[in-house]
Length: 305
Image (cartoon, rainbow, N blue to C red; front, top):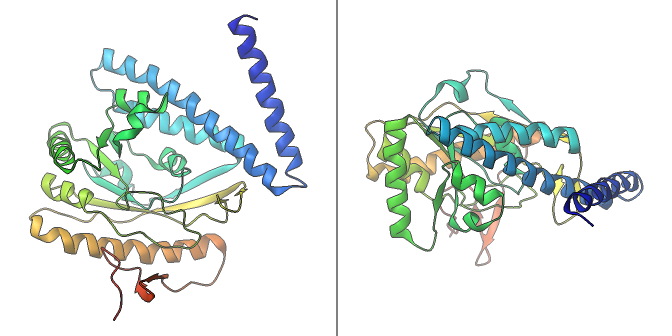
């Protein structure tokens, strides 16, 4: 069997499997989870490959490959909507995404589906930050490296500081924005809550003297819930908040800036999630630390005495 034959039969088998799972989902909801998961991972690979070629082309013709991230984000957004029925609705009446540059855009981090969220709202002339291990991931890592993503090694704080310093310089010189997840990792939370914020995004904004733009995504566990194998079609709102200026701020202001921004985002997250689910407005989530209640509104979770 030739390579082209293998690709053909593999593609036909894949499509047949996905369609069969979609049909089965009418009777077994978990089958819909598997169908959409298969489609999502293939879409990531296809769009990442597209990004590799776009990055190479832009680097060769313009010397500036970061625009490939915007192009691939949009391609993934439309691909996922057509194949899974999932879309993110961006609420940005002031066109902050299109007019605020450079800036440090930040958002809450829930699941792998946040890649699609970025596809819907990712602004032009913007780069994402990611953990260094993603560099080694086939297709996606190749594209991110070629497109100028900022990789951070959490185990090497000295190297991360140097990377952040370089990012701040590039933001000033190239008018390049950065998108970061201050929680640092996915929360996989079923309710609207935030993990403690890491301060890297805020140090970067203060160092570059550029505004912070919070982008709040409603908790979408009613659309995707990994533990319950739920993955269905639906619309998830994103609200772009007003830019928070950092001009004149110094490193001494970072703690308060982090705390106040997180508190603002948590309030918006609770309201937006209630609206998305059509449910009453919930109260802030509390978690247990050493057997005592801890509020979800701070830079770090501190037990209440």
